[in-house]
Each structure stands twice: as C-alpha cells, then as structure tokens.
Amino acid sequence: MPEKNGIFSKRVSGALACTLALFFSVFFFINCNAQNLDIKIDHKDSRVSENIRLLLGDLDHSTNRAELGETIADAIEKGANVYGYYDPDYQWKIVKNELRILIKASEPVSVTRLDIQVLGGAQSLPEVENIIAKTAFKTGAALNHKDWENLKNDLLLALFDAGYLESHIVKSEIRVDVENLSAEATLSIDSNEQFYVGVISYSGTTLDTTLLEKLLPEKSGSIASRTHLMNLHKTLIDTQYFSGIEFQTQNSLDDKNRKVMNVQIMVKEQPSHLFEIGSGYGTDTGPRLRFNWLQPKTNNQGHSLENSLFLSPENIKLETSYKIPTPHPLNNFVRLGVKYENRQFDDSSSEKITTSLSQYRTLGRNWQQNLKMDFEHELYEAGNLATEKVSHWVPGASWQYRKLEKGRDPQSGLKLWFETAGSTRWLGSETDFMSLRSGVSWLYSFTPTQQLISRFELGAVITPDIDKVPVSKRFFTGGDQSVRGYAYESISPVDNSQQSIGGKYLNITSFEYSYRFKENWRISLFTDAGRAYNKQDEDIKHSIGTGLKWLSPVGHIKTDLAFPVNDATTDRWRLHFSIGLPL
Image (tube, rainbow, N blue to C red):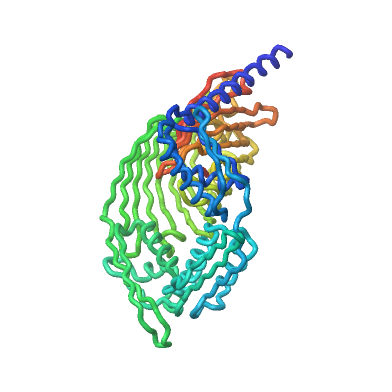
C-alpha cells in the first residue's frame, strides 16, 4: 500500500508541476516583449493607475524622452481627471526596462451641487426618479465623469423606453473649482410628449397577418419604444423567414390627439431553399462535416421544413423535421421529426431510428420548456454482449434557464437545466426505466480580467435492471465538455472483458480560473472530476490542466491541455479543442 501511495503522489505532483509550468510559461511568453517598456504606476486610486496604463498603451524603449514626457503628461491628465483628480503632481523615470510613474497623493474634487431637471411630460416618471435616486453621481461623492455620462445615458434610455422619443439634452455642464476641490453639475433634459404605437403594416411578404401580429412586441395604442423596435427587428431575423428588414416610421396624431408612431415594415423574404455546408474539428468528435437544407416557409402559415446531415467518426446523424408555429414561430411551436443516428460509445454502440413529436415553449424570461413523445427503434451493443433490439415509446421533457451577459467576454452568467425521459414495459420497453439529468454552470468575475467558471452535473437512471436499458439511455462521460484529460465518453463501468458498457449514475464537477491578458485572449487553469458508474465505490476520475482561449466573434475557441491525476490505468496527457459559448 505505501508503494501505491508513493506512485500516486508522484503522478499527481508530476501532472501538477507540468500544468503550472505550462501555465506560467505561456503567461511569461505572451507578456514578454523586449522592445516595450514595462509600466509601473503608483497612485492611491487603482482605477486611476489602470486608466493611465490603458491610455499609455505600449511604449517603445527607444521613444524620444521629450515625446515620451508629453505622452505621459497627456495620459495622466486624461486618466486622472476622469475620477476627479486635477493637476496631480507626478514624477517619472526609466529604470532598465521599466517606466516608473509616481503620482503624489491628493484629494479628488467633490460634487458640491447637483441640479437635474426633466422638462416635458416625463417630469414625474417613476423610472427617472429611480435612476436619480440610485445614481453614483450625487452630492458629496467624488467627481467621476464616467458616472456623469452613465447618468445621462440612463436617463435618455429610460425616457426612450417610456415613449418619450423626442427627448434630448438641453444643457449638460460641470464647473470645476480646482483650488477648492469642488464641482457644480447641471443637467437639463426636455422629454417633450409621449408617443404611442400607431398603425403597423407589412409589405413584401405573403405570410398570414395573424402570424405576423404574434411577432409584434406591442400592439397599436400601447406606448411606443425604440427598444421594442430593436427587439422586433431581432425577432423577425430569428424567424429565418426574412433576409432583409427595413422600418419606416411616420409621426402623426390619433383621434385622442396623442402623438403616435406609425410603422411600415418592409421585408424581403428568404429564398425558398437555403443550403449550408460546414466542417470542423473537435477532440470529442474528431473531423466533422455538416450539411443543412432549410425551407424557411412552406406555406403562408409559417410552417418550415429542415433536413440535416452530420458526419463524424463517432456519430452519424440524418434528421428531417417539420415545424409548425402554435402560434409563435420562436416562442411556441410544434415539431414533427424523423432521425437516424449511429453512435459509438467507446466500446459500446447504438443504431437508432426515432420518430418524434415535440412542443417547445418559452416560459417567461430566459426559461424554455420542451415536451416530447418519441418512438424509438434501437439496435445496441454493450461491450462484448450480444446485440439487443428494442422498439418502444419514450416520453420526455426538459427545462432550461440561461442568462449570459452579451459580448465577446461575458462577465457573468448562469445556466440551469433539467431533463427526463423514460419508458415502461407497456410502452414496449424491455424494462421500466426513467432517466434524470440536471446541471448548473456559473460564470463569476472577480475583476474584468479574472473570472471563474464552475460546473456541476448529476444523472441517474431509475430502473430494476440497467443491463436491459438501451445504451443510448445510459451514462458515459469524458471529453471536452465533461472530464478533460480523457477521450470522449470513455469513462463508464466495464464488463468482465474491460469493455465500457455505460453507467446507471453520473456526476461531474469542474472549476476553471481564467485571466484575460489581451483584449480577446484568456489563459486558464482548471480541474475536472467525474464518473459514470453503477456502484458508489467506483473510482472518480480527476484531471488538471491549462488552456488558451480566443474570444472570437463566433464564440470562444479553446485549446486545453489536461492531465489525468488519479488513474493508475493512464498517465497520458490529452489536448482538447472546442468552440462555443462559455456556458
């Protein structure tokens, strides 16, 4: 036993040492540039130091000293003024390859008087009063020009969303008395009159009027909002019915003498057939090829037909689905489908034809529900056991909540999901079973550059005999999205000949710390743990590793290097490639 512990300790220590060495080697390499000066700024307010550093950018060691002095002076003035520090005393010098800037401690200018006036119909609008009450820019606070700009933008956006579409700033002024460290701010906004939605009409489409009305966020007579127009534009694009959308607005008075905004929506319909071919590579799938054929509108009721083919060494999938809005094409629809799928699960396999009927609904904000009834005909092989065949009905349901901050580098996010499916003997199954699976992923940022992504997943198949449950309903894990350091779905219980056969239970845990060292680049350290198992005493697989992530316009493109650390059967490292959202 002591010998086994010694081997385990050496493996863990070796993997950890390799991971940390790679992490810091990458960090050192990407931050080293012999021609650029390292910059160290000493100021009591870290926001000022960071702002000045951003304004300075990359400075070349060979830059003329006079020119460098002007650059530093300009950056300090702009960077410090933003946070209320005016005319700061400072010194700078270059020591070897480091620029050192020492800024003398001083007190920031404080806001001694704040006068905000909203003229017109929105004088007592609750949203405006709430923004003014909660703003960080207030009397007694240090002068912060970013807070001042945020206050103005928040007020205008609130007015626009409340229907005051002609709102504009009449006066915006800050008078600074540097000697007395005081500032007086004045803001005056004229909201004018409130607008209401007038006549909304479409041109350029043969879609049924009833369907088009379901896409409108607001009806005639409701308060007009620019946000609603932006949301409507996104909704129309997301339906895939249209390739071009243009709004024309015209203001008028209604029969109640109110200002109304009439909207003419001019659309260009998609071609009747859309084709898409894609290829890629991932360590879970290997090389992959995808073909998609979409008929976005088969009739004026908005029905659509989609055919797709997916090919990879581990998975072949051919699918046809017919979508019927009931009545909303994005938030409430029914889908009829037929799918053929051939999957390889390490040492097991499944060949399945599925006929399905499903209903998709949006439940409030960020929640989706999918209810389905599938009829499956499956041939499966688990390990070295004989091929089994089953034809059965499988009802199922899933719910998902996702909230992720927009942008290339989201700073916060949360994803929750739960799914279940099952069958019984009287539905054609060889045994009664119910599969339950749920997970949560959380993205939290300590600072704009440092963040943590944590992930937890649990699963269970409730059945008296797991050996009679089809392989496609059992659990396998390992790979890019679960336990890195292991091949795709290679972790599961094994039979007497050490062939993977799939498990009754599943648990996965992952923690990943990342640091953004460039605008669209992050490096990371992570640890994963998980298992698919039948008995509680089966081993949990652990891994640690480091990664590099490019925050591309189409998603995060990741390269991860992972090392198993608690597995006597392997000591190989594994490289993982993936692309997608952080949650």
